[in-house]
Amino acid sequence: MSYVDLTEASIAAGGSGRLGGYLAEPAGDGPFPAVLMIHEAFGLDDMMRRHADRLAAAGYLTLAVDLFSDGGARRCLVSTMRSMASGTGKAFTDIATARTWLAGSALSTGKTGVIGFCMGGGFALLVANDGFDAASINYGRLPHDLEESLRGSCPVVGNYGGQDRTLRGAAARLEAALDKLGIENDVKEFPSAGHAFMNDAEVGPQLLRPLTRVMGIRPDPESSPEAWQRIEHHFAKHLRG
Image (cartoon, rainbow, N blue to C red; front, side):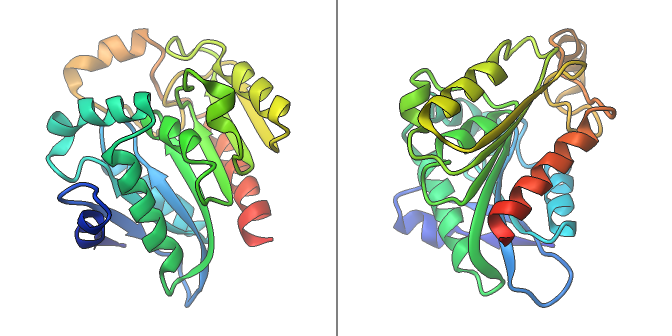
């Protein structure tokens, strides 16, 4: 497990002045299928690194790109969320830079998936039609122009929580749009789960946690194992096959 400095490539591409990520490598010599991971709104924290380690343990060369590299969450969160809402901006350039680096790594087979959680799930959905072979969307916000944004996407697996007050009906809307476009998909809403249910602990500032619980943002150890199983099955099918 190591830090990857993507700053030079990012600047050359017109992206952020600083860019890095956490690289989790599977055991063995490789090459391995690869996964680009996009973090939650709280940033590339220990929880996100554990998610990356989990994917590496399953055999995927995983790069968790840090979209807040150029100033931290406090300075970068608002601009990054605006970028997601508009579908343009440096965040997308940074994701493309990380994807190019990962696909070109000597440890990669070239087959590359994308996975995102919360904010990262929204980004993963928006870039699923940009050079990836499979996408995993986990409680990601849907874009306003859903069908147009999804056109040309790679196969998608999606996990949402039925108790997530921030994304009511999102799973059904996403599945319907993907079906209409003829894009292979497997989207599921877990009835007992809330937002961020795949985390194994609460995250974010301590003062905000009572509010996040009210909003249905909490781990769900009963639903999480199946969600991870679905992701691993999806990536095995499209990145190893």
